[in-house]
Amino acid sequence: MTYGESAGSNLGQLIKQLDTIEFKTDRDLYNYAKILRAIGFELYMRVGMDADMISAILSQYKGKWYTFGLQSKVRGKVVGYHLHVGASAAKVLGLSGVKMYASFVKHFIKPEQEAEAEARKGKGKGKPGFSIGDKPSDGTGRAA
Image (cartoon, rainbow, N blue to C red; front, side, top):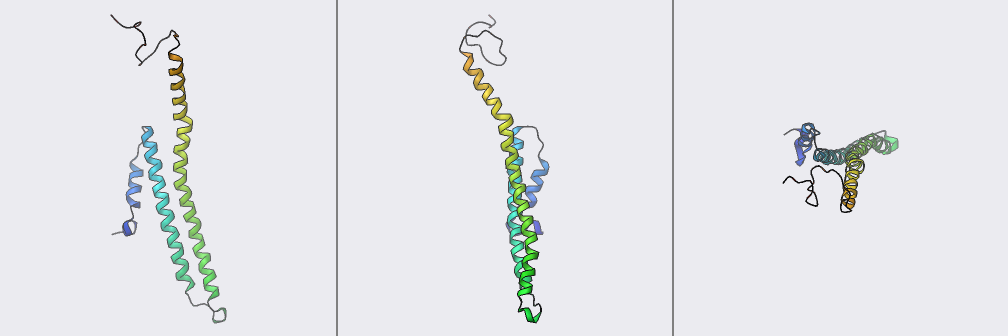
């Protein structure tokens, strides 16, 4: 068992899934965002817990006798803080996937849906025209 697979972690599997995605459909973008969110959450949790553990371990170090261990506690928190910043970056990574997909929906899917709704709204008004892929509402245009 390697470090990436310990304690029920599926980080290695998530990264493999992310690597195999090819962007061919909108579903691929959704899966990418979902996997990236899971990776970000996993890293955020793991690095955050590791930061707390490192801070606790380093604060137990015996420092100078005249500081009564206070110096080691402060320094341990400083060292752990850097990992907390990294954990926050992992959280942002996960959120960026979600924001990417939301932006895709806003800029590509919603305009298509609105255009389709507008086309359906104006369809019954008797406008003559040419349509592809839709069945004509009346008998005109059909081969006999």
